[in-house]
Length: 212
Ligand SMILES: C[S@@+](CC[C@H](N)C(=O)[O-])C[C@H]1O[C@@H](n2cnc3c(N)ncnc32)[C@H](O)[C@@H]1O
Image 1 (cartoon, rainbow, N blue to C red):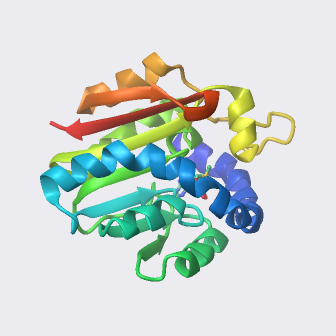
Image 2: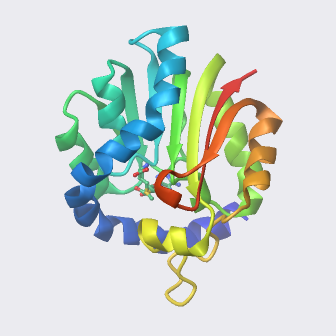
């Protein structure tokens, strides 16, 4: 499954390379919305670990969430397999560390107080999700915090990045799960702290959680 996924995922990866410039141009428009989405997570981290907390931003793209978290004083690392996105991210947030690697190949050297997975977990085949969640679990320190958000409809996914595009096969495996499926995955490893739909009537599932 992993090997087949990698093969299929090559198309999505190439797509992100070509999307990076567009994404980057839209970054200022997205900042207010994402600042709001990150707020509860930022509050939890500040309360328990303080402003120096280590945070990993998985699938960081051009660095939207990384920049916001960096401004809050956290010690942020962004990770993405799109080289072009990482180049933009480095310019957008010069004081932040960025890793250009596939999450599935990454061997982390340290644990984090927080992790963000923004429009990222839906990029994996549903059968890979148990392994992906194992990896998320192993990234966090005891009582560390996580924030995830994903689109929950084809239309929303299409708006985010066009990744659900059967005709052009960018990513035929996009994991468009229902809210309850995501909750099941999260609660196998973590304590769910809160979950809510997207702001502005968007079909999103957003959740904060904590390592038990
Ligand atoms: C929809 S974008 C989300 C960007 C940002 N997190 C946000 O919320 O705006 C998804 C990002 O995940 C990255 N990505 C997808 N699968 C990945 C993988 N296996 N390893 C690393 N990055 C991946 C893509 O390159 C892309 O930049």
